[in-house]
Length: 248
Image (cartoon, rainbow, N blue to C red; front, side, top):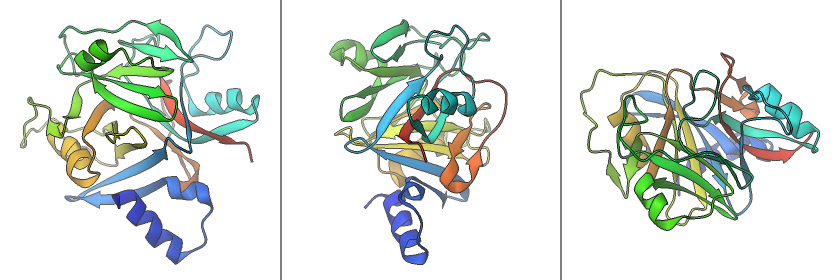
């Protein structure tokens, strides 16, 4: 049983929470606290959001995404920022929304965390979602309905990124996503205090027991989790990922 499922089982015994509340929870591991949200791809609808239909400007906030979904009779279940972006909020690297490629893939090394190879792609398909190292994505061409590229990879086939240092003093609030081998279980995590890459990667590998995980971002990391009474504010974001639920 996953860490989040264990947490939700205990909560269910403690008080009568609505089903949506079981998606997200707070956990502490190695002295650091994280908020994790889990999607079951056999049940949940998971999507990426960048711009409103017919609009040029990026949505930029959870509130704006909810306004778009409200026109469809839906709302965000939970959501978070979904990858790095330029100053005008254009995605850095691959971005696919509703089957349309908005931004092309970047396979070369470069400055910053994105260019710390290997980086990777979060790919959403019918009934599954996968975290794939960029080279694997290029080899397999999986045909994603939605995809966002970011970096570095945190966990690759059960191994930590080779450049991570256990005692690194580079610590930030960080968020990322991991996926099971069958693509059904997807877990998003955000740290509630600064952590380094090694600790964050081991959280996905050793605590959440996920073989593939991808870093999404650091300083701008934000979470929307209404079941926890949380919707982080801040400067406008680029890509946003979230589950879609029926509107209350």
